[in-house]
Amino acid sequence: MRQQEFENLYQDNWTAFTEQCELLEKRKNLGADIDFSANYREVCHNLALAQQRGFSPGLVASLEKLSARGHQLLYKNRQSLFGRIVHFISKGFPRLVRKNAKLFWLTTAVCYIPALLVFLIIWADPDMAYSFLGSEQAASLESMYNPANDRITENRDIDSDFQMFGFYLWNNITVDLRTFAGGILAGIGSLLILLLNAVLLGAASGHMLNVGYDDTFFTFVIAHGAPELTGMVISAMAGLKIGWGLIAPGNYSRKDALFLRAKDGVRLLFGAIFLTAIAAPIEAFWSSIGTFDPSVKYTVGAFSWALVITYLVFAGRQGDTDGSQ
Amino acid sequence: MLDNTSKVETPEGIELPLEVAGVVPRALAYIIDLLIFVILNYTIALTMGLLGNFGEGLYLILFFILFWLYPVIFEVFRNGQTPGKKALGIKVVHQDGTPISLNASFVRNILLSADFLPFFYTTGFISMMLHKDFKRLGDMAAGTLVIYTEKENKEDPIPKVKPKAPTFALSLEEQRSVLSLAERHQQLSKARQDELSNLLPEKLFPANTDNHNRLKQLHAFANWLRGN
Image (cartoon, rainbow over all chains, first blue to last red):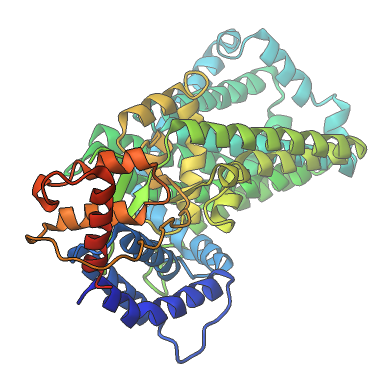
């Protein structure tokens, strides 16, 4: 078949297919009797023939363009974003953490062991606090958690609470994102940011205990600490996941390993952001209330930790096994 | 061939060419997006400044969304194009040519901060220069490509002359060359057409044909090849 004959034979199909593409691109439905995928395969077939028979580059290019258009429409993700998010939070994320349990415990150890060590060092030798925190930061912590401080005993107005909410949300999630991004430097960036925060946590806890502000400090941090610290650990875990792909790519090239690990990595990061986002309103609107008895705050704090642990251990154990999104 | 086309094989067994965009259009697109970001940010800051502490909290939330999600929202919901990319006629797709997903867009835009290191996108620049598809680190991790959006095909109808069969069977590549040259007869200068037609096999044309007649012959062959 010559090109002219070929064009005459199929031109109507191509015009019809172009119209179908236009409709789909405007997110409209095709009629029930139109089989888009069959039409698409036919265009692909036409393209293959045109290439094989050496038809003119102009025709080949226009068929390539038409196939590319169909390809984009046929292979796009049609699940609703909202449904995917709900599924991910209720099932996919805790499953993913459990699937990567080893990495989770490793990252947890990297966070809490140095934090505990620094805490013990400062507890044993109070002056060490100034080596870890610096005198300025130590002083600012002291003024923040001094029980005699107005801010502790009186409630802030709701405006300032909201201001702090915005700040926590911006600041903490940005830390999560940077921690993840640091993972691409063979995991070193993630480790550094996590260690830095762990040391800060240990040093602040130790120092507050030494100066006797432990009640105000721990009642403040305990409730939102559960999702926030877990989110921080998991964002580092996500970074290490991609970093490890570069260090030990296994049977893949480093490029491919990076791409494959990043798929789970970004889903871990989404989960970390979810936990951090929950922590922000707790920190801004609950932790800041100083009028409750410490026992109430500790109870709520323990409840918060239990909730996070239960979520990660048990959520999504039952039901459909598809944890892909 | 040495060009910037990346071939993608689809499940239907055909190869789609994607024309990969290089550093310069991507950098220009980024600068446009940066300007838009700065203007939006300034506007929001001014408005929220009127609302006191509450406004400051709201500003931080909006700034967060703007800073991290501006490119993601546009890439996912506007067909792979931020306003800057749209202005430059480029877009982001998965490396298999399918539209970009939320996850992939998120990965490539979060890792923009890693490509920034140590200063002003040095890592991203070096990575793009070394990669055959101009990928920065974020593109490698996300499995994405930045390509030119399809341009309108420019083909002129082949001039109608009486079809004539060549004296010998042309190879596929020769057929394509003849057709391609005939299809572009309005876009190329006369001299360039002569020059290109001289690259075709000598024996295609009768001996001592002048340039003008060579093109006429060429169009006759093209008509014959198309089956006009």
